[in-house]
Image 1: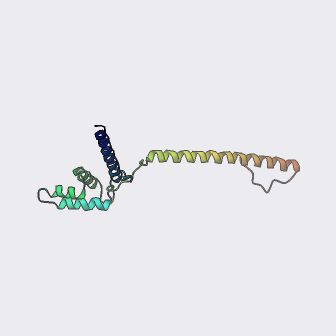
Image 2: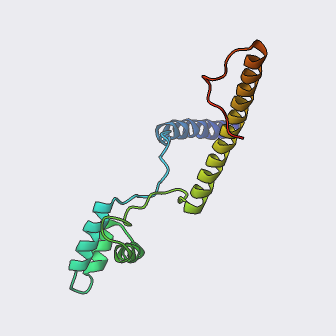
Image 3: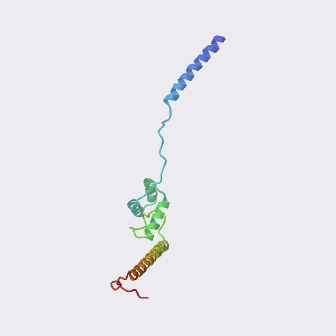
Length: 153
């Protein structure tokens, strides 16, 4: 009986080693699969698909077109609305990101101009001060002030 247990345990060990070698052979590929990303349709693709959908007349043709292109019927509905709202050159390919607010742009331009006016006023005040000092200096030194234009007061 002891021999029999020993024979069973050795045959079990041999089976384990066979299973281990088959596991090594069947290891999964360590390559990382890229994550899925949304499809982006260009204006030309949208127009081509819409033209093909408009050409469909028989029942089931649009369904076949949707399966062939790999799109949903909601894509067609959205693209048709976009085509209806704007001419074919415009709204089918909108740019992403925040839209430009004309009121904010105008307010920013006004602020910039007000800053520039303040800067120029300060520069003018300095220039007036320098001119006054030059006039006083020329009178103290007795130089003629006829060459300089007189300032109206």
